[in-house]
Length: 272
Image (cartoon, rainbow, N blue to C red):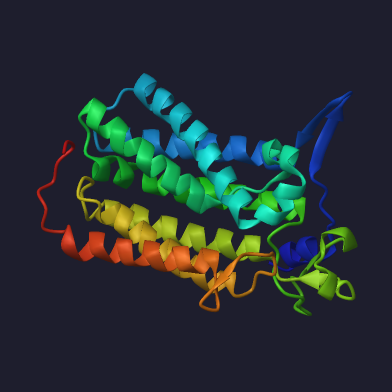
């Protein structure tokens, strides 16, 4: 643990992993690729373990669609939360590799996509969401380290031993005299792994198909994210003295509670 603390406290991350002539390979992009690979692997293991009737090719196709709609939704959410910046620099809307993806946007976009996908393929929406919830957690946990390399979404200044250094150019103007900040990306990573372990545990107790697993995902993920948002210093619209992300968390938390307590008696099914 002490070595990890030293890495956080002393390492100064850079967004670019390697440059090959005019081509830049960003840590953020590489981490997204790893998140997709590990999320796919986890979902396929669940399909095989529980003998779910989804082929490897179908999962590949589904993953491709989820990536496309997820990236579009995640980017749109981020752009809307920092709309003033992108009005001044609209061409940067398409700079995915520089970071700026909102998990809530990805959830909304993919929820809509999966609704129609499930109807077309004859799958229950809740069945698909139950199946994909662990991969969502794992993928987001891995992707969070992209915030570290991009020096974004960090927390308030701190004197704690694990505070991370942030270069002056990335600090809000009111914090230019500080150097170390809360590594909120790592707090989110730890929380996601905790929730992932819990979901894997309850999958053994609750069969997929009713939306209960996805409900627990919504409740626990949004709870942790709501608390961590109090530490973040990046700009977000404020509504009722809460950050926009916190309001979304409250909606997701309530939705998760509904799934847990009001759908638990529904008949288990892989179709609507």
